[in-house]
Structures are given as structure tokens and as C-alpha cells.
Length: 140
Image 1 (tube, rainbow, N blue to C red):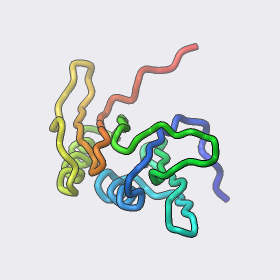
Image 2 (cartoon, rainbow, N blue to C red):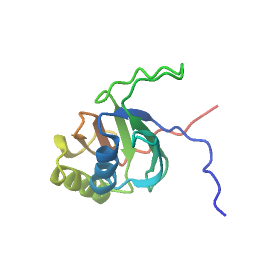
Image 3 (tube, one colour):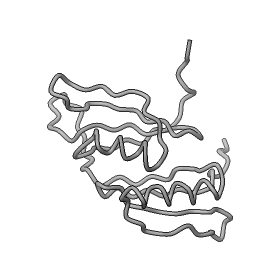
Image 4 (cartoon, helix red, strand yellow):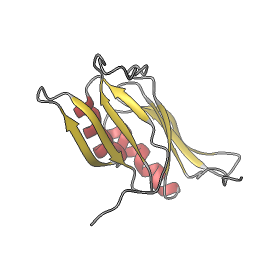
């Protein structure tokens, strides 16, 4: 029996073509498809993709929302940072993403604070940065 992960932050985004973007994230970035809920018309209402080192994202198809829960995110307006296992993983994700059609923004580089990062735009224009910086420890 599996259990839900501990509480975490899961960024969300909307996609013009959710199925194509999910497939891109799995093949180019290395996310894993956890669950996809689609309507009878095939529109993806909710999908969860896991990031193997931890966390993940949620996304759905751009559509008119009649539920009263307003979604103000337009496709192509998302930006995210995914922590990689190490510098080689950053380089691997960048190379695989560019080979799959992502637009390179910053080839792998070392930062002044010790991270090894790279950045791309996905096919819908979302900004993705991958790097080894895991964030500063939470206090308080």
C-alpha cells in the first residue's frame, strides 16, 4: 500500500496541449507521470508529475473554468526551478531537453553560490531552471 508524500509545495500551470506537455516533461525533463484525470471529451482537468529527487508539478488543460475557482495562469507564464541530484544530472536534463525541442536560455554554468544550473523554455514558453542548489534550510 502506498501513502501520500509529506506536505510539500507543488507548482501548478495550465497548458494549451496538456497531453503533449506531459509527454515532453516525461521524456525531456525526466518527470514521472503519477496521475491524469481527463473528462469524457479528453480534456485533461488535472495531472500530477513527480520529480524523482522529490516534489513535482500539477497541470491541466487551458479551458474555461465554470467552477468558481478562478485560474489566472495563462499557458506559457510559468517558471520553475527543479533541484537536480548533481551537476551531471543538470547537464543531462539540459541536453535531453534541448534535443527534445526546448529552447536553451542558459547552458550549464556554475553560480557564485555553489550551484550548477541551466535554463530552458519548454514548447509552450514556460521557463525552467535546473540546478544543484537545494535551497536554504527553513528556520522557525
